Image (cartoon, rainbow, N blue to C red):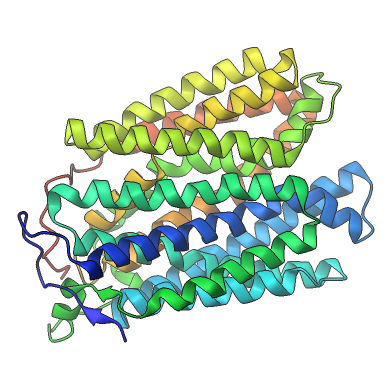
Length: 417
């Protein structure tokens, strides 16, 4: 059975086995989460062709619809699992999320019609929504202040490697077997649940006379809503890249005049290889600067530069295209810092709700962003629409990141009233 961790970790306390195990489970859970999350980007074309869709425009439109369904599932799942995290505990939320998305991905291997695909992508998205926020919240609350950034960077670095693994597996294994692999890995991870420590800070809120896990608290008072909105919009450019550049890379490559087809598994492997490098760099920089916000702003500036370089250099050929995808991916590698910031911005009774909802609101931003991109694409072409929209998204992200409070040294033992 799960055990409770210390109520308030001290700076000089050595890490015990239960805390280390919690970091390991959160990291491996995110590995499986990312493996499953990017599978659709890799398997979109082969899986839809297997279901009888071959027209290029229909492949794009149906793929967009399935991506939207998955992202809406993640938005709703983020709210639901966030509430669970603050009401039932970080661990129950973490393992419930893993169980749901693993089952959905196993069933994905057996779809025979697009409507079945839609239903299961929604369910998978709903389940995928809970893992990262619950895992980051648990790790942040168990670790001492100085080590929070290190722990969450480990979680994200191991987790993001799951996307690289998905790219490698997706290039070599039939599409339905890829879904089976992802689902079975998640079920295997559940065996590690015994002995994982629950957050002592969460346990301390059980007797407190405050609302726990109420998402409406994120909307009122206005200052708290503005704080949540700024957190979400500071990371929105990451999912411009994930929702447009990674998913629709074949269409962007054709628009650039590259005659050789751009392969989605190679895009994901190169891009997320870059993300892993960027995540390590952003985590290290955050610790050196002792600042979350300056790290986020710095990486957003790098992202703007990398999108401009992508537009200039990627048309030279497939090798340049994949290489620049890695550079763009590295510039989005502040995801762990963003989620850590989201958890640090809110009190213990609302922390899991915020940390779980925020990443999924960011992911859901891909729905309007991809719609805007598709509307721009006929008049401007996919390549030009990509860099113009990308620079606009990054500009908004920088303004919002600059408005955030610095939370690097913040003591997390407080409540929202």
